[in-house]
Length: 374
Image (cartoon, rainbow, N blue to C red; front, side, top):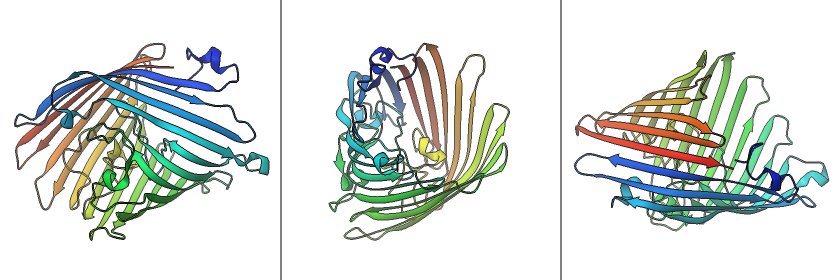
């Protein structure tokens, strides 16, 4: 978060480490039809400190706090409640002394943003894991990460999910879990082609194996492909699921469009946005009102992003149309407008609306952010 204009720059320039963070207001209102509505607002702070590197070692700590300003007595719907957690606290060693300056081993609480675990800083905090992990980028055009996560803290605050929980609680299963052992590799050896391979073994829950491919077919055009398979392991109940994704990313002037398809067969996905995150356009859905990660669903979507040159306004839209053989058809539309208003200060509005055809129900979601970073 810290940059050239951070108020912490005088301290950060002294060589005693780096302090960064933010102060943020978040107001939310949700109406999910049939009287299921509510609103809540919080004021949050994120405070991070990273030490200088000494003999290859550095460390970091991150604290997250959010306090309720108003609670409309429907906390389970809004998931915008009190947060009080050390989201990060890690020790890292860099193998530069051995000639591998882009290779590290880390232990502690850390925010990851890879193929298995996504940061997803959508509200007052990012997703974080308690982990031991090895990472290297010293391989040619390749990034490799291998690790084991014991517990996870989610980006939403409902049922204490913002605290660090064991993975059976994260996935909502009955059997206890020893954590998630995972590995992921992202390769860019071929110009214009990115291939990601990943596997995650959630003990006594599920095993995930998958791939993500991005091929730049033209200067302003790319094809994205996605596949993942999940199956039960250990003491978990029987389940199998497959997910397929295909989309076109097209830049037209200052607008980037992505029309695409995402489908799930078999059981509902365990590894998805409400749990560990998913590195896909649907991973930023505000409501998941159409059950886009449920087994038997097909989703056609259109994503659009642009930034207005004169005002630096960011505009974002995501529309999904989902049909399910075992239930009804549904739609969801998300819109985001983010506007810088002063140095390091932004205001952002996020709005969502969902509709389920067979049930004839409509849901709305509105969020207002005011964020100061340092």
